[in-house]
Image 1 (cartoon, one colour):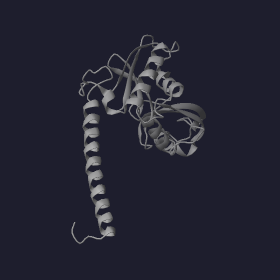
Image 2 (spheres, rainbow, N blue to C red):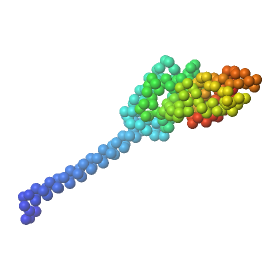
Image 3 (cartoon, rainbow, N blue to C red):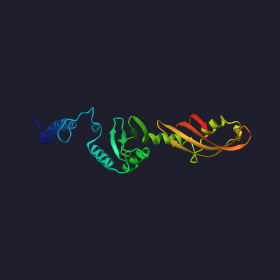
Image 4 (cartoon, one colour):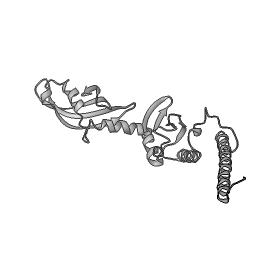
Length: 227
């Protein structure tokens, strides 16, 4: 340009070069985004992925590969023989077994052996027999257990169960807890078995057993004594 000093010309040329490089960079970025978008719709073989049926589209390709590898190992496991497994879009893994002897422990086993819930892809493993859920284990169960453990001691002593038992006794003040234990049931419920001593209608102190159904927040649904 006329009347432009050498310094001014150098500065102008540098600005023009930067502007040109910025435009090129934006164009390249746009092309990469388009390629990435198209690639996400197809598998490695070039086949279009059906997003309504393919749960794999919800996770990254590396994690998807790891998931498939783990599932393949699970199917070869001889401790529990899988007949079917399905990972739902709710991140819950549904499994079915060929043999259900001691099968209620399968969800816990698979999570412990294969670290299914550690990666965040799976939050719960549910075991089914037909359409009936037999047992479950995972992050949901552990969260429920954590809440329930606030209401029960390691010895199985639950204050809410104590009060429910006392309400059925002839002499509530004679109640004495001996020992107890609890079992995780489905849908956030727990069975609490309690051994205790108390006086009966004849004023004799006897030992008895109670079974209570308890919600995770400690609310007692029902209690049965001596059955």
